Length: 271
Ligand SMILES: [Cu+2]
Image 1 (cartoon, protein in one colour):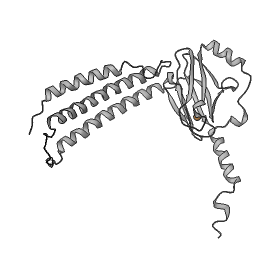
Image 2 (tube, rainbow, N blue to C red):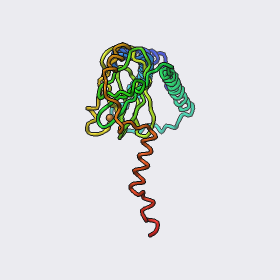
Image 3 (cartoon, protein in one colour):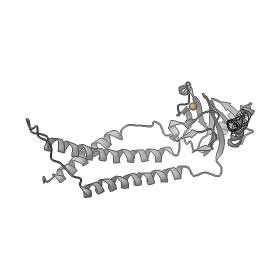
Image 4 (cartoon, helix red, strand yellow):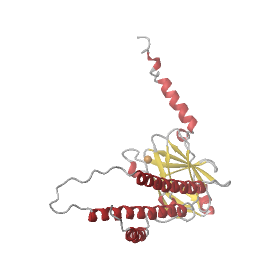
């Protein structure tokens, strides 16, 4: 059995893994950070990049060594040796990835748990998603309604109650990092604390039909005073037909089914 140059290989992995990590960490993958969730999420991503870089390095070094060391000599047309499994090796290469994956899952869980802690003075806003537009209801201030433009105060937690009116959409403001699906009949919420004033884009991140790419809204993060002033100027209230809670949505679906007679009551059984 050939003895592997373990020390050299480990060194190669360290060098290759480090160089790759350093290069990949230079990129600003997600753009500006504009919420309190952005930092911990970006750190989680950086840790994942570093771990992946070293795993990639291990694979490349092992593969490179095998290719050079055990390549066929010119003119050698014979078959390779029949090789049986190696139980100890298989146990090791199963257990190590399991530990890495579970570790990263636990870390992600902790980050998510932390950024989704709700404040008692959080602002509630309803985000209505429909093909192909976003509209917003502000239930704490007379249920005012804004179309295509969302205003939120800076440094205050906002809880968006997502309400899909037709198909599945997805609420995503890249600078806030948080993304969540809006599913008809389901209550989902986005919990976020914007911490940087500015104008951003809310993007639908779930292919929802022909106009999907145009399904965007402007997001304005501003001081509490400016937010209040803007809200005071809004005159329209959330229209009745959009005011669907999950229960109302389900009730509507039921009514529709009853009106169409239902398949069970159509006389199929009598025949
Ligand atoms: Cu959409």
